[in-house]
Image (cartoon, rainbow, N blue to C red):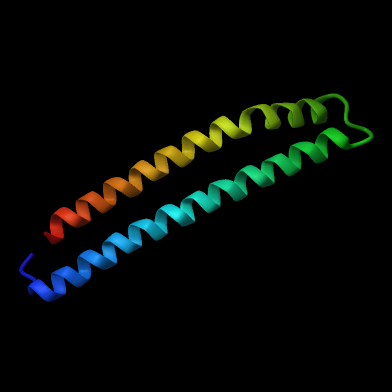
Length: 92
């Protein structure tokens, strides 16, 4: 890209701060997803008629939510880091 040095510095700063903001938002979204699945699994476990597939679903949800959310968060964070690296390379 043929960009003036001043505009290049500004664009680089925007990309850098945007990357930090994206990681923060992605982490908050993962935290909220974990909180929601925790609340739902707890709600399913405390139901008075929680037997059969309902109790089984709550148990599976409580066991599998953290690893799944962790893997999805990590994949998303890698994608954001990769996008930021490509943008920085194309600017500079």
